[in-house]
Amino acid sequence: MERLFRTSEHELQQLKDIVVITSYFEYMFWDMAEDRFAWPVEITIL
Image 1 (cartoon, one colour):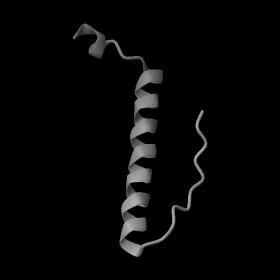
Image 2 (cartoon, rainbow, N blue to C red):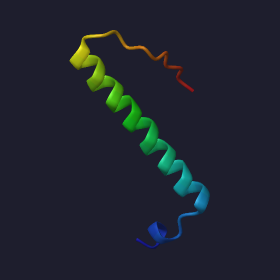
Image 3 (tube, rainbow, N blue to C red):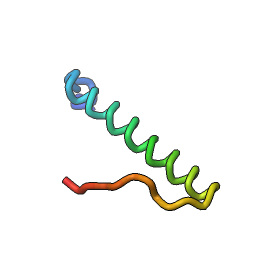
């Protein structure tokens, strides 16, 4: 539990970035499904 309160600013920024990116892909998925389009984003696995 103490670990949750010792999160650095860098870690918090990484978590915010993850939320923004996953939200974008979630939006793109549902938009694609509604409009029946192909996936427009090329994904590269790190």
